[in-house]
Image 1 (tube, helix red, strand yellow):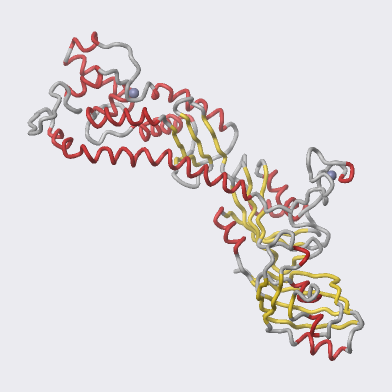
Image 2 (image 1 turned 60 degrees about the horizontal axis):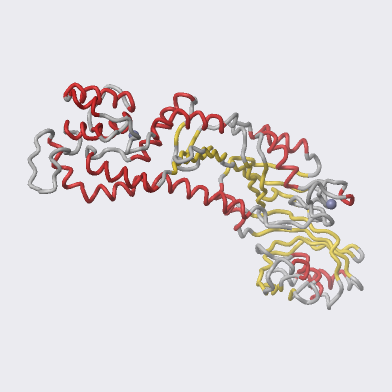
Length: 472
Ligand SMILES: [Zn+2]
Ligand SMILES: [Zn+2]
């Protein structure tokens, strides 16, 4: 069986890094570039009085907010968005409308300006701001019916455009003018907020991660997963923990004859008995199941149950009543699986649950060949309470685990019951103890073992129950 969805996790994380980087970097880059010019630029803050002791001033085009500066950015073809962004003037309106005000005033101050303009692409944004409406429409289309309340927006812009914009802005823009990328992001967010209700823009853990390519105007909407924590009790044997593909066809292309075209070796699994009703309730695409360790197919899991985190991929809704969901799962999986403690969780809890080293308690029942008398059996097995075992990787799992010897402590061993040739006891062990091997010794690969303390008697496990997982 495969390790569940490790590749997906990596993919998801790199997506997040990518989106963050493309959003955050622009701000950092332009701040750095501004630094080298900041001393010069501060001089211009005083307004229209151009006293400056340096020698590199272009007297025809001082930076904004000087009227000549504003005239210059209009002359080189800046769009109204960029005029407003660079001018460093207070305007009655924001964005494009504010730019129109500034432009009008500049035309009044210099009547030749208007007639001297050619209809060119804005050198600051290549008319990108003109695409904001179009982009917002695409975003809304892409989101469709997916419910969400938070969005993280990332923009990808060609580097040469960003560099060129930065150069012009540092020379001609008003000190502190907002760089292209964050301005563009803000313009999209403002438009989007008008059209979509109750959405806020965040920089981490969004419901939707949206990436806009400024060159192709392609919009990618990534619906972020949600996570649920709970504990499950597995009440029957012959039920695998995770989906088990058919041995014959390996679950490929619609299954085969031996699996009745289901693609599955076992029709049901803990993963699906829990995950499927939840997937349906959240209108999600798929789920990933992350359990705190595994149990063999024939092992029940009782007590408070085994902690798990369910990752629900591409949910269409996020607003559900967890108590109701828990009831639906329990109704549906009646007498097979039962869940409790269901609550919202997150990706970091997946790691926590998977890496947890919790002690576990079991009850195990086995048959002893040529069994000694009851007193000897109880006395011998009791001697294992508190010992540290040396366990080589069991033969049954050696195909998927590297061979090594591990030390594991038997914390408590008690409640030994002998019935004819069958023995049963309760045992609490350190995490990672192979309990079946503690009994039958795996041909001497676990030392000591029940088999060895009984005088190398052959022990055959009948059943094993997890009684509890001692977690929190
Ligand atoms: Zn522009
Ligand atoms: Zn098959």
